[in-house]
Image (cartoon, rainbow, N blue to C red; front, side, top):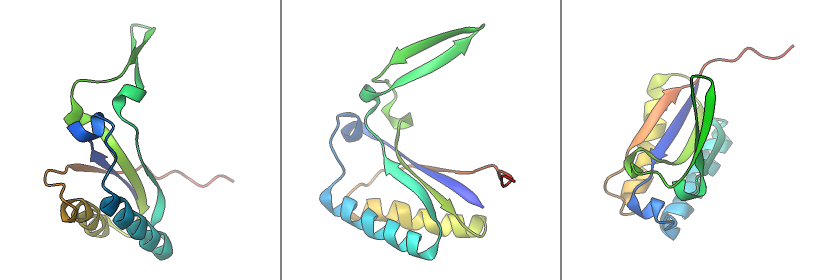
Length: 123
């Protein structure tokens, strides 16, 4: 089962402040362990919303709005896609993922976890 873990950004993230060196090092180790276990599919930190844009379609018209966006608490700061055996395993993985953040001084961390649709293998 594949899950996407999306960690939300904060004001520092939106201001372009990079994650601490300590968190970056711990994330590198964590991703290495997940890759060795065969559960890490993909992941990365994202740039602030000021370096992005949104596309919206309404009544057949498509509009593009440049960032930054006002609700920083709803901005995704990074993601990881994992392939785990079940939901319980996904919960274990995300607890460690969030724990790395809290261990390095980030005290208010939100991570949204969503199961991904199963895609049939190409023939």
